[in-house]
Picture 1 (cartoon, one colour):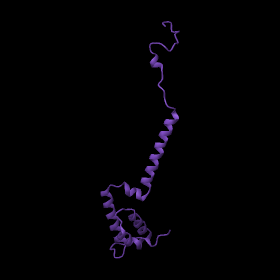
Picture 2 (spheres, helix red, strand yellow; picture 1 turned 180 degrees about the horizontal axis):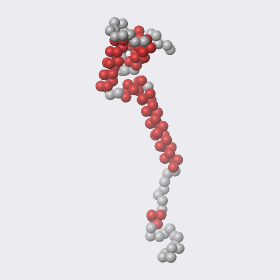
Picture 3 (cartoon, helix red, strand yellow; picture 1 turned 180 degrees about the vertical axis):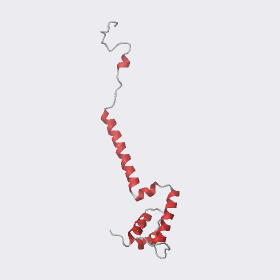
Picture 4 (cartoon, one colour; picture 1 turned 45 degrees about the vertical axis):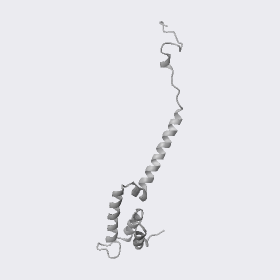
Length: 121
């Protein structure tokens, strides 16, 4: 043992030499990949759609933004508005945006109908 020729695995520090059993690397990579792809899909879904953006807002933010967008729509796009008229495409975009809010009930949809009539399928 003192001459450095002992190659047995039964020495004093044999536990330090033994490696704990590990799962194959591909399992870890697969789990990490699935988690990363799932997170990316959820992030894109929430942030790319109008409905997702509306859902991501807090209720107070959603209410304030809805009221502001409605005021702009009434001022610039609906009959009797006191502001300068906006192009029909802009009015249609804002009307479609307002439809994504849960606050937009049947009365809201009826009032937005004139702005949506020029929409192409």
